[in-house]
Image 1 (cartoon, rainbow, N blue to C red):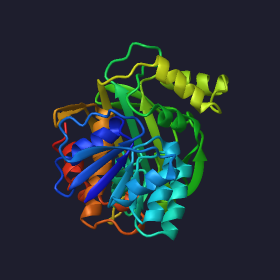
Image 2 (image 1 turned 180 degrees about the vertical axis):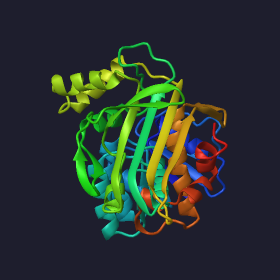
Image 3 (image 1 turned 45 degrees about the horizontal axis):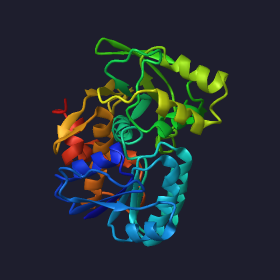
Length: 360
């Protein structure tokens, strides 16, 4: 299978790195508007200079692929998805942006191919896990999904350093989210719903952000009483973000906030991904059960490349579903994350290595 990746940043390069060892992948074309992308250690990959805003080069690139992954900023995904639809090429992305997902879903209804947005960590793997645990019980009271990509050490007031897309980070802090309450879909306000949670003796705060529920609100409406997603941070982070985005009214100026963060907040390669899913409900015999999936995941050196935790967990999420696509385990049209069984996902090469029992 020939796979095109648009966006040769950290995550795009990591996806290419993981695909290097995958038998289902014959070749990888890594596209970006920026020249000089390093492909050291990647024999399957080649670099292609493509400007997404130029329709003809984008169409030519997409048309040569069996599947295209957008690892570009979320605001470019509509353009990329539309080009895939016109070419009849299957499309995957990492977006947490609800509006983008709605746009992709509409394309899937009118064009051939497989369309699967929200394929990373959260949304992505968190929904595969949450959906599978919720489906394992007859009646579900609560499904709580929590994820944090955190620096191992931070000395600033935010207790946070950057490790992934700044534009995506700010967007999920500013947009409303989706949840279930009393079995009905409700809208959550970003940065609200603050709670404290302890995992392996470490204390975190969790609060509402957008995108993490993905399509689960629709899938489990009437079947799960309470379902929600929250981002994990070290205590105190949320208050500073609310001051910045709400009190100073910078939420409508996401581009400016992104520029400030990119300029003034350091990047870190020493990070950890905290992954937490807890489901409570009754089984077929009416017994009340609690089932959970909790992991702390770190980075690794793969193909001679040092990958941090958020790169590895995000890329493993989408590489796992690409393997399932290659094995024809994904149907045509719009594919929801929760339609993938956890068993199938953990049976993939990178889903198993990163999220499985042997993951460290």
